[in-house]
Length: 187
Length: 114
Image 1 (cartoon, each protein chain N blue to C red):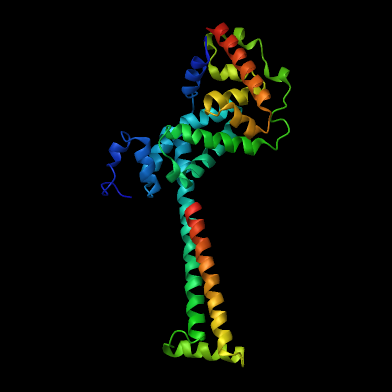
Image 2: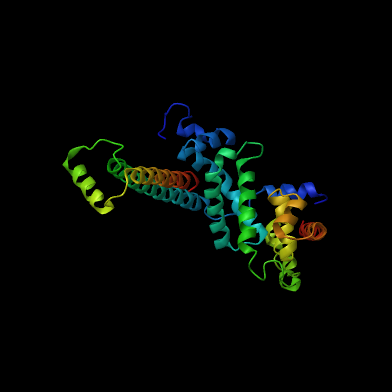
């Protein structure tokens, strides 16, 4: 759709247009509107995938697939949450489904993931969320990121991961405790 | 860092990232490729569908013949069909039209869903 076409703001104004309006335009085939949505949501989508434990290349692949899936169903986006949050959920589901077949997905040895000396080794760098998450077990990291990053309920996480609800709750609680502990130490 | 709210606040801040613009460009490129592929597929499906439908409608006598080429085609088809009763031609045409409609429907679905 060209700039100035009736029914859509000029390109320069897209940046000021709300997600729901942009999604409605994208559903009508407006590429620039969808491009603006992708631009807004990309940092959040990549972040949540990386925080779930995805390697950079995998995170980028899944992020692309998630945006293509979002484009196909953009007419079902109702604007109740931000487009970024909506796409994060799509991306998180895609990542979980992609990784389900990998044997080490949730079964990594805890010892491999807890580098307890890293906080004091590099005090100048501080301890941000991403570094703290890297110290959790894969299951804790995934459950905490799905819950607090992608906005899944614990019941939704249990369904996605084929895991008992009680186990999910334990992973989230333990993960949060560890995060708090490490972030407090760092601050 | 005293409650879950503050953890969610931390999650709300995107991680430090290298080049989002390149990945945005990659997504838009894949969308464009997907759109072109779907358009090509739809074009082929519609062309095949129209050609099949026209051929069968002419051959079954539903549409009047137009031009020498169509007459030759009809003659060829009738030769191949031999003594097939007229009713069978019409039934064949109706089934083929249904098939073509399904083909176009499938192509449309591909076009919509990518």
